[in-house]
Image: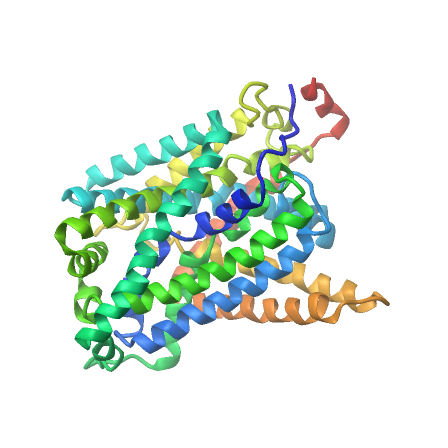
Length: 461
């Protein structure tokens, strides 16, 4: 079997993957939470979006520099192995495959189902929504595992679609709000009970982590991008800049469509109220349909990376049963075995997410937010990588101070800030999450194999 991926994606698809994985769900899902965190202080919310965006762009820039030098089968694992050694690379790769990717994919399946339920008027809290979540989860995996070319085209198409509601609200909502005076009213809004500015900002920045996350997943298809050493860095840099601009513009636009009290109280329904207020009931409903497609586009983009998680370990002769998970189907040119195990793990995390968010949660103190804490964990894992980049560059006689020292230092500061924000925001939930994290890491470490790469050659025939 052939287990080397084809060079099937160009720069447009790479940028669409970066933008498409990130944009489309978190900006809708977390806008309400950020308003709640900041007690409706719109200016403080914009500051949170800006801080989170700066952290994302600085980290993406550093990874873009790494992408210009290394090209294998899974970007982040390649970079960590090169800079921090094989053991740490395996540790990060196992975390990505067992926790990070499936956690985000399961949450995205749930968000897609929630917005679809809002659209058709179904209950968004019961088992009906969770069954629909499972349907969207399976659909995304089937699409990616059986037809990666179609999955890539879906990614480009949904990226274009998801910009429609964002740009419309950013432009029309801002004009609408300035004319009605609602924008200034929301900027001047002050709640009766206001939490301290520092803790409110930290909690809000932590909330932006989910909305901004996903760009790193684009590095998992670096070996499938044509002229990857040139195109992937461009996609990471310009893609993340586009994301920051559109998020802040949307946040300002929606503040001109709905008053803060309605937005904070409405949850997912508040977004629909905002669009129907600005574009009428029929127009608002039509735009909300695009939001559902937008959310599915993010799910599709994350799934593109998730199905490659165990494959990236197996290609190094590591992880569970490398012989099986290194195989690539000769027809679909995708790792079928890796896709199946990735789906099963994502289904488990979806079940956990459901049980952890019930009024009477199933897991007691071991209930934590899988939409935020695993993301912050990855930021913590970046720190040794960035430190080693600085260390190597400082010894280089032809060093590039800006690329090799200034930007990695900024990325380290941003990553530490994210970790601190998570501790302040989630408190003891972080401790119980770390217990689960340690148990999963131990399983991966004890049961890992180290198969000589020559034994994998049989699967290339």
